[in-house]
Length: 154
Image 1 (cartoon, rainbow, N blue to C red):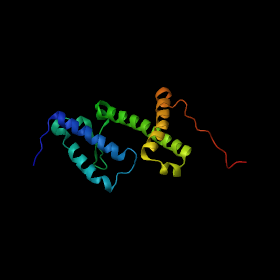
Image 2 (cartoon, rainbow, N blue to C red; image 1 turned 30 degrees about the horizontal axis):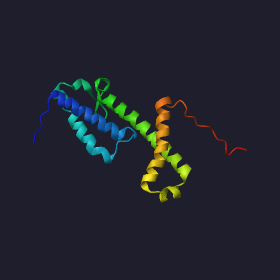
Image 3 (cartoon, helix red, strand yellow; image 1 turned 90 degrees about the vertical axis):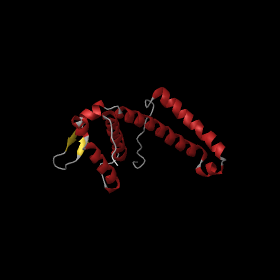
């Protein structure tokens, strides 16, 4: 079976490959066996760039033979903006979630929380979510401070 792509569809496919590779490797320096099938398919797709007149978007590492999307691609692709938007939203959601959960547990204790009905848990924890959502919405990280602790020093 052969799949035919327009130039625009191929560009979209490159965007999707970039996003997938970013998701798989953004927080890991190593590319290993668990992602090799994705890498192999990505190499195959990028190798076809010249067929779509997009050879200017890829480069090849002479030592390894690996093909990768170059700076021109990342500068001109809208996918980078989507990834930045995603990272930003994820950062705030995770920060709020983790701080709210910490404060919820600190306030009520794990044993008491386990005894609460699910709706009671939700209502009480949402108070902390709301507090952090409002704080970060108004002030960003401006009011976040970490104090140094010298507990081991006398």
